[in-house]
Image (cartoon, rainbow, N blue to C red):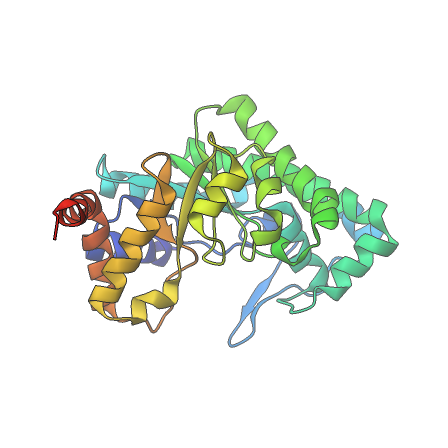
Amino acid sequence: RRSNIEISLQPWRAFQPDGVILFSDILTPLPAMGIPFDIVERKGPIIDPPIRTAEQINELYPLDVEKLPFIRTALKALRQEVGNNAAVLGFVGAPWTLAAYAVEGKSSKSYSIIKGMAFSKPAMLHKLLGKIADAIAVYVRYQIESGAQVIQLFDSWAGQLSPQDYETFALPYQQRVVRQVKETHPDTPLILYISGSAGVLERMALSGVDIVSVDWTVDLAEARRRLGPNMKVQGNMDPVALFGSQEFIRNRILDNIRQAGNRGHIFNLGHGVLPETPEDNVRFFFETAKQADQLLKQSERLLAVPA
């Protein structure tokens, strides 16, 4: 598991970001509650057999953190390496997304099996979601106690739900995780990210998290208006913008920070860095972001000078 630590530290050593996130598979906690999975080359995670019966759901057990000692080791190592120079972020999947993997058995484009369960056997799915939510809350606490200073909750597949179904099958279980974590760790910031979140942005704020991470399909100024003045935001530059020229990247960074306004904003991409991204452009992204305040003041002064 040393590789988890090394991969987590690679961006830190190369670019010195303000935060270092634990590199971990989104499904990591599932075997510790009775749902084993395999990673198959070119296919990704496979859960076989998938969870599709009441009997299987009844056999699941509360999360056993003793089965995840490598997570504690990794987080402690990250804290030791970065010291006070960066925040260490924990990483967890949210209940709907983990349930979708468990029920579908693999990555999906249509999510027809879990949606079919939601619409034909809702009580069974609610039981599964409740068990997963309680397990994730334990997992989040474990990460915080192991050294994570911020937790990012990924409900990657909840953007595929209609707003009505999001309110029924995703939001209550996000709230259940957040409520349990805040009972014991009220001061640890929680971030929620959903890919394709434009349709449910306001509902994300109802989860109880401290920060909503916005993808690049929403204008950040509009996201601010929709989320209200008290919600902090993260994001949201299109990761493919890093394939542009340095001038293009600089302009996109400054536009994004202007849209967010000068409060409660973690500047970031609206998704992960794509594998083929030129490394020099990633470096330029970090260097420019760190100088953004200075660059914005310079551009304001230039605009203020009469022609």
